[in-house]
Image (cartoon, rainbow, N blue to C red; front, side, top):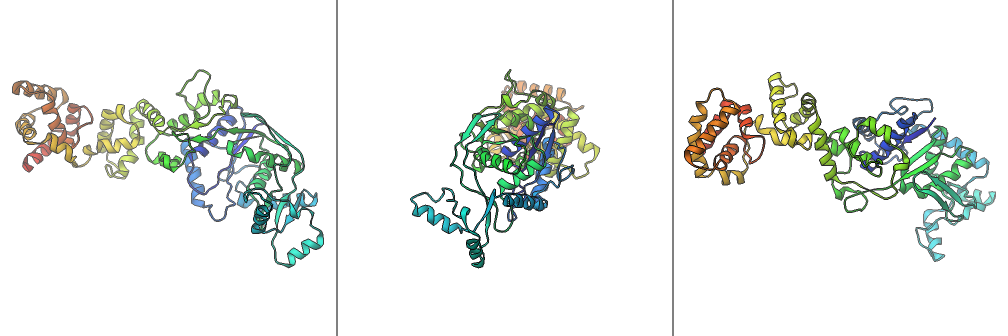
Length: 479
């Protein structure tokens, strides 16, 4: 059975690139009837935080991903947090020591760098394997000096070939990998060691991750072999870039799933969009349901070239999904944003929910995010905050004259509905011989505070006669 995993570090909110990695693993597992494992890599004691782990889980769940094994659901090969697996890493390290596949290294970081420079090399170049051949007496001397050793893997002199499921055959020649640290001086495993021990013990069959890990893969293959474990198949996804084709970072705007979630994006739109980053259907289709993506996804359709995250394309797609939502579902999803904006109470009355539903129906075709609902519809729920530029442009003396003449017309209307409103206001325009824009704009600004929004007469009907007249009279009193 196929077994894949997503293994984030809880050192911050879920990055878009990592969410894409999680999604590709999820789709692959569901496509092939496999198991999707969530593993938390929390051995970075300084940066790992429980609250970030919780946030990762919440954001993955929001995205619609579910896992078969993980820290919150358990499973047969747990624990699923690296911080709870330290004994397993110690056992694996002892095995490598016994078999002479690893050795203690007492070199200080400064000594290694100095030897590199003295040899005419760069400080960033690898270790010179000095401690490989220390005698027992030399090791005892280092111990007596109070040096705490790291544990290094003894890299065999052989080329390593990777048959990558996305990138094809990649060969790393012998000698390009120095002996590398697998256990730090404080006893904690390095990333390379922990990930291989975990993947082997958890029976991971396919490792799907970003191409920035491709250079780590020969180290991992050598460790799998040294531990006597089955080497999984590897697939290295293209990197996620910003619109300027540089690595996606905060200078491109929001980079976390949490930020887009809080901005009012729909999980199904986000799911759909990031699935298209580095993958595409043979037909070039863009809009997919979850079920369609599971059915269509394959590593063979993944691109080697970098994926460009385009916030504007995501915004467009989110708008498409919003327009397709049934009315009741749109209200359900928009209410938390209306509440956060102070437009609805925590326990809204049925009348308030009815107002929200009718207001959302007026603007649904124009919404791009759920936050737009709060931004565009606030004047239905509270007193108007006027745009100074709109007031100066449309509520000048001429605009106020229009309002003064329309006020008794509107006051006498019964019923106060959009059809009657439109007939009466257009009749006023014909009677006065003025363009409709000279009347519509002052009226819209007076009752909503803005120059754009829902259809004017639908908006007036929903606001109701009392509110419309109160706002018009308020403007006239200011004059």
